[in-house]
Figure 1: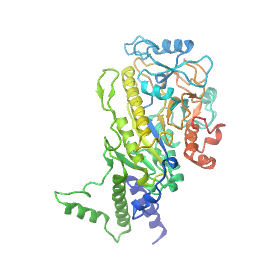
Figure 2: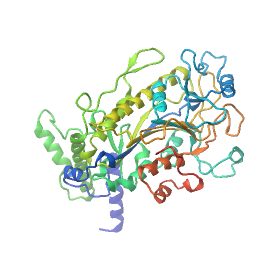
Figure 3: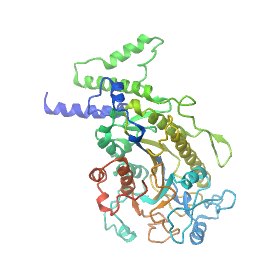
Figure 4: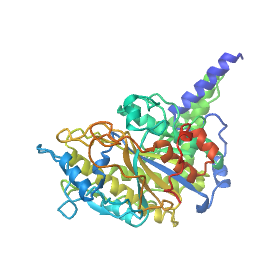
Length: 480
């Protein structure tokens, strides 16, 4: 066989693996996966997981975490209160539906802070020390001043204010079209700690570049468990023989090298589904409790929360970590609807209620998961395309840059705000236009702090985040 067909074969193998629900395609998949998982089963103290909760569309940070000292509140109300019926200013603390005051451990002189009125369960997590705020985070190549930004005198992140590009940039350090994400690259480095590398990077929200590695491919699950290949299990056309025949056709030996690779990938997918289906805890009273319904703050009605169901799915996989041979896992969940150009006050309130409800559910579930408290071993963090403008367009906001984010878990140094909270208002040193924030903390710094806790060395962190060397602090201190 010549060199060129070999290269094509490797390319086919990688591409086909990404389209399937199989994990790594670059290493042999053991025939006896259950034995492999049992050999690598770890105690609770050895296990760590990171969960990326992506708020797709660009969350309005200025109505999520607010500075409410008198000067800041005056600026906030003067800019965000409009003559439109859809004015986006929130009520003051103490008023009906008012913002919820929080008191961080670290005093920022002259500043007071609150959370959105719908974030009550998240305020409880903050007050109990299991959640923290990281202020004004966004993509940066290097520390940047407003003057440098306006003069374009230093390298800037590409394609700012674009949804697809900034989602990709947050997840991969590259604009749309990126092949590998920083979650997947961490998985590449730590997958050897797992008895079964297939379940290193797991998405409960479909395909995400965040989880794509060079050697590790993301494994996708949903509320029903592993995503199956249709027709290869149970009955086909009403008969078990039909399923058996289809599986034999799909996985049988072939003389053509491409067909061989395809059959091997399909077999690995079927085997992986079998392993996960056996190991993954059931939903409900017999396993991981089902989420309660959340209350829509606009109507008072109870409703199901899809984000909480995604986090339940993550918890079910974590509960099966022993059978999967997992010691390090990276997860991805997501909730859309954050592109609040219109009707922001009502829509954002509902989004915040779902976010807080889901995070609180996940924290409570981890506290007694399989009879163990795993909150110190699982850290959840939020991410989003960008923040939004401080100015209102009447009843909504437009695309911004920097944004505030939450980190939750037992290993988080909670009840604090990390980073200097930006000035509230317009035409200050962090305002690059319409109150869009110039980030003070880079995504690389935010992510590197998580990566260090996860077990990456300084050298590995530099490999995953090439721009981290441009910043004086690679550990922001929010992880124990």
